[in-house]
Length: 174
Image (cartoon, rainbow, N blue to C red; front, side, top):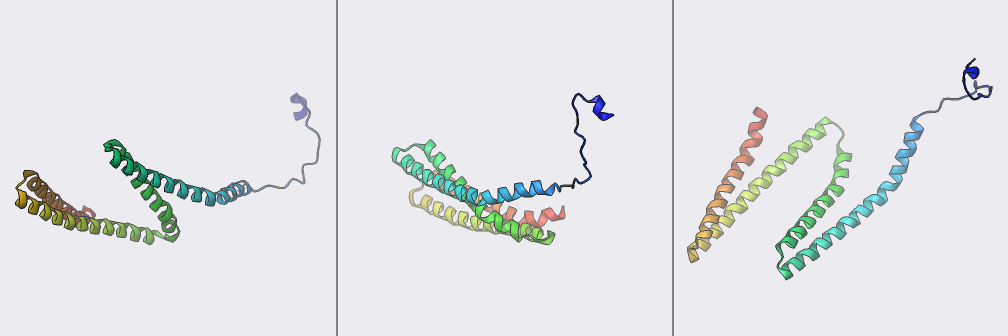
């Protein structure tokens, strides 16, 4: 009856011995294939980032030699981004594999906030020290730029300190 309506003939076979096939085998094959190529891709990406960092260093040297500010910016950005990407490539697998529960995520976020707060306080102290150095330069030669830079650095340091201490305490209350 179905054979009569079709323009082609379906052979009459015994389909009772067909066994169901798990669909996980397809994804298992893909995952194992990706897992086999992940290590070489990781190694290649580390080598490529190292090449980019060395190229950025060479661009920085040439920009200093030829006094080209645009090349200096390109070199700095290349070096910084390759370094940060390398940190992420090296650190992210460790972080992902060490997270076991929601408490670990909470701990990771709290420690990240604490690290950024301590970093801001550290930069605040360095900014205050540099502002004293600029103030000393102003007293030596009475150049108005040194006085302006010293005032700006002290103001920025005060803002950094206030934000680094008050904001992590204030935001959870909101």
